[in-house]
Length: 253
Image (cartoon, helix red, strand yellow):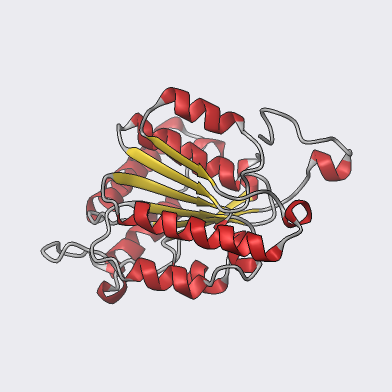
């Protein structure tokens, strides 16, 4: 995956108390102050040979100022909350990104639930690896494959509904820090599950502490608007399309 092809978009007004799960006794930072610091950081740049200074002493002064601004940016951002995260787009890497978060989470000693809404007709390397690495993984592959493989819309919808019921149980279980709903965006795009049902359920949970990841291309506008963090994977090149290369272990599964 080429990181320059991944566009990170942070959505949702983090400072709107009506839509967030902030702790009530926590003082919120000034959005004006945050914006000012962000502008300063952008103007100072990331350094290296992108900076205009030819004199190293001047360069050090710029980077020290950048460091000071960055410290202030971190200091004013004190709020923690359970995030709704979306990985979408036509490029490869959506499930892969969520599994990276799973690895990070078990590394911190927390529990992870992974519910696959479409995939499930095969065993993947990531499922084997994560189960070997930690007993804190709860993996549920409830799909039976892509639509052209199942060829049964009624059964597909039943399986999606079952997966959603299981997902809700894990989301409500505070012992799980991360819940990944893999390919749920596809399930909503196919009409098997309403995006509004997902949003209504998540919004009904007061002061939720865990993080929820929704993967799959075609995320609905309502899901994107509700999310705290959205990353769109953009397809630039793919060996299957341009070279006729088949899906391979370690790359695709």
